[in-house]
Image 1: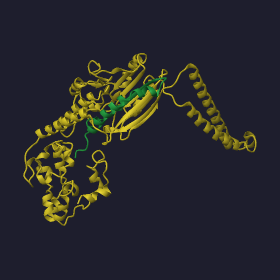
Image 2: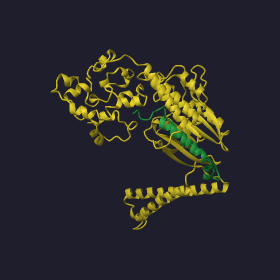
Image 3: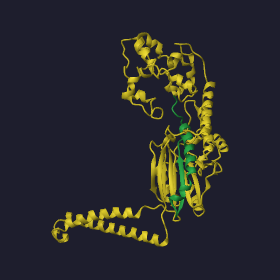
Image 4: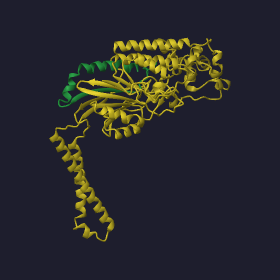
Amino acid sequence: MIRFMATFLFLNLFFLSTSPAIAAISPAGEGLRIFFSNDVHGETEPCG
Amino acid sequence: MALDAGALLFPEPQFIYGVEEQLKATAMGVVASYNVMNFAAVGIAPQDLAAGLDFLKNMQEKSTFPWLSSNLVDPQSRKPLFPGSTTIKAGNLVLAVIGLTGETVPPEILGDDFSILPWQKILPEMIDKLTDQVDMIVLLSSYPLSENQKIAEMFPGIHVIIQAGSLTTNLQPQSAGNALITQTERKGKHIGLLEISWQKSKEWGTNPQQAITELKNEEDRIRWQLNRYRKKGEPEVVYRDNQKILEAYKGLLQKHENILAEIAAIEKKTQENRTAGITPSSFTAGFIAMETSLPDDKTVQEIVTATNETVNEIGKKKFKGKAQAGKPAEIFASSLEDYRGWQTCGSCHPRETEAWQETRHARAYRTLEDKGQQFNFKCIPCHVTGISLENSQNSSSLPPDLRAVGCESCHGPGREHLDNPEKKIPVAPAEAICLGCHQPDQDDDFDYGRDKRLVH
């Protein structure tokens, strides 16, 4: 979870910064980017 | 946008082994992190209710995102206890995100201050109401795949279903009804990404040219087989005395006609869509592995560090008793009476013990202390000797020569061997013993054949 949460925010910011690229995906339609997850529940990185 | 389908707070619907307080602290850290990460909505799975309804309501108050469940209701009034859906504007699109809590856990395990209604009682009216109001409907569901497939078949107004559960692999988007169903593997190992080109048709399309090509290949193959039957003349005449061959020929004829009809239907539909300006929606999907090489975010890392410290403090307050070397505290007496400690082993096996002291097993408890996790009950059993998750909260009372992954962690308790040295104990532990702790989640590079040579 620790690694997931920390790196996910990096990815989140990265993709948000490239969001103009979404429009290029489908000029005739609406572009949408969905990140999704499940079963995170605070699993930590290795204990030791 | 970021969505989580559920099982965000806890791994199981019921707490075990007395780690409740630590798990709750971790759950609060998760919520704080998700706030920073701007999640748009989170579905409620049965696991999220492990600490009770009041705790989840408390988490809702601390969250900047909505917790969604359309079928988690008050048992008396039957009214939803949380928002059933939320509407999100994404560019020019308006999406409805619906939460659906699975009924997979027996009611007696969950609380008695709520009920989970079957989806059949909730979804029809909800979907009917939302379909004309929004461009796309996304369902966050903790039902199993088979139920989500039924839901997708019944409601063409649902376009994406994101599942919650504990899969061992990622579920690539698969079609059912007019929906894509997908899920990331367990424990947050991956993030899923759907990039969608959403058209006014509100329908997912397949590539018609690809479908036609595949059907034409099949049609070619069948035509070749039909020509073989026709080689000696008209099959109805040639094989009039062999009904079995004649029936096989007629079956192939029918199959050929069906394929030609299917090709014609696809071509007709494609032309109609082209004429009407209708374009089907499309998507690409991927799963991003949360590898350790990815950088951390400073704000989230601070939350994680603070959460770990809190978890450790909680464990520290549960510390019970003290012990001297070689003498377990009384609270342990019954559970540790068969263990003797590595120093006792060393009196007869000095060479092995000396080699072991240079290994990571000997430092296992110290690595927890270095990370400030020596009171994290989930970590302790694999860093000491003779402790399981059931009594890990008492581990700080362990004598020093059991505060490591000692000889008896791998070779078993030493009491019988000490009482009767002729009674041998396993020299090389089976791989299953090592894998009890060296699981992929904790050690993704473990190789039994290679690593057993490192022990001593």
